[in-house]
Image (tube, helix red, strand yellow):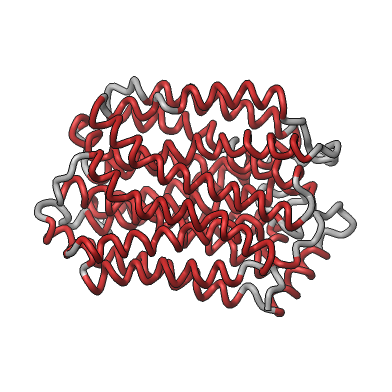
Length: 484
């Protein structure tokens, strides 16, 4: 890809961030609309789980395929296709006559969504090749998540309260169309010089693994954990995982590049992503149901209550990008894990929902933690790896996020299904184990932040880079792996 001027690079970053805004705004707005959708479509808690997880599962299953396809056929072309499909899926969701149709149309949305964020991150990685400049660009990228989290609850609340839940999908239409036009005009085409072959067997194993695991978790509370169907799904998930690892090891051009995982910082980033996004999706799912169903607030007032969390995410995401660029990922990860863990403990051990002050403190702490965690995940995933594999590396990080989001909703929903309906006090008691799970996710981020950012971890990253032989490498990002 030819060297671009600073102004053009900033424009490319802005266009890529539009795709992130499109997807993130859709997800945050959807959470506010869940209770209204549940009432109109006569859905259960598991039905609401599927409106979220049908999307995240398809995205997670296709992200790595999208990343390798973009490296092969062109990142700009793949990105534009994703924008068109996502926008079309959004229009269909707004017309869904029942829950089953909505879930199906969410899957259409997800096919397009799988071609957006990882491909956009690959475009950014190939546009911003200087390490500190890339870290700052990723900080801006994280700030867009904060913008969507800040705007989503408020915009969603206004739309649901005044027009109805179907209007939340209309938001995507003008953003998507504008992004398509701007991409065609300003984003340069780029691809890997040595295209990778498709891996249909690996792709099928990934789909089977994620689908069977999530189905088992969501449906087990209704069917029973000892149900033969749940047992078959669990066995299928375990078999798919074992088969995937064995098969991918033998392929010259695998769907999942297992050599990446010889790097402790990279492996740690994937686990941190799963933990952080499981905590986020569980946090949003819990609080949406609590504020509207248990506490009786309307969609707008519930959205306003979530603003402190979103505002903190907005403030701390770009700050985290600057910290990673100047001091490495350790400080951001430690602060993120501590804040998210403390938020979970406030709810689990101190009944933060019982008083407005503690509830606000829990929201602020979680927003700070989640705002800090995104930049070190993304920066570690794409730094130090061959530039020819940027799409695959970014897709692994994005897949980890989506897997975490799916598991968070599935697990938290399974916990809540045992008796979260009724009064606020009953909801608080039923949700207590779920809050301990979120606190545990924060503790995992904190612990991995220590383990994956020392000298030993940096040495494993250098050895992992050596496994790629003489392939073209991105410039080493020492701050992503060597902070002491």
